Amino acid sequence: MKIINVNDKIIQYVFDPDGNENLDCRITVLRDNDRALLIDTAYEEQSIKVLEDLNSKGIEVNEIILSHCHPDHANGTGVFEGAIVTCSDEYKNNYTMSCSGTKYKYKEPDVLVSSSITKEFGDYNIKLIKSKGHSKCGLIIIVDNDVACPGDLVMASRQDKTVTPYICSDGTITEHIESLKRLKLLNPNMLILAHGNKIEGKENIKVEITKRIKYLERILDNNGNVKFEECVESPNEWAFSRWHENNTTMV
Ligand SMILES: [Zn+2]
Image (cartoon, rainbow, N blue to C red; front, side, top):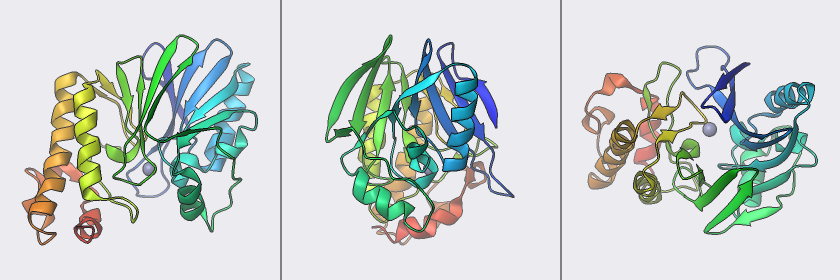
């Protein structure tokens, strides 16, 4: 486990994957003196480490926001017993479906987002916008109108390669494109990813989002009958192209 400062207010706990996989897994922490708000909780064994570290520093986790309900983002939520959990109103179905067969403690959510809401935490102003596509239960989280956490709508590999978007069985390509366009319009200065290093600068962010939109549009334009190499400009700069096969079946 590594702890990094994303900016002067936000930290991340980074967990490297086992073996040869290229996706790390991150828990983002907004701190308000001795209180913390987590964005995602990763797997249970990872959240236990975060809980121990925060407790050793006298910090209590008061709030959790889940970018979506897949186990690598939500499996550890039950570890933080007293915390208020905010997530999409699609949470329960999806969490149960995604985490069935894994050992997890289900934690009942406290606040459900059906479209968008704003909340305060200490000095932070946080906006949550329901954003489907990767999965039904996705949220984009905007902090202080400046930083966006897009969940798995935007992912990067450990080598900073562009990770191919993945459309889960309850997601759609059209919704994924819509959510990426929404993220682009929000025009953040920084993207904090749940998999991969942050992306900084409005122009860089637009380039990264546009790449992904173009990739998904190519699939739609060709009714799924298109090779990965025909959908992107520099295939070598992309990771997880193996997900393309799944995505073409989602047209
Ligand atoms: Zn994920």
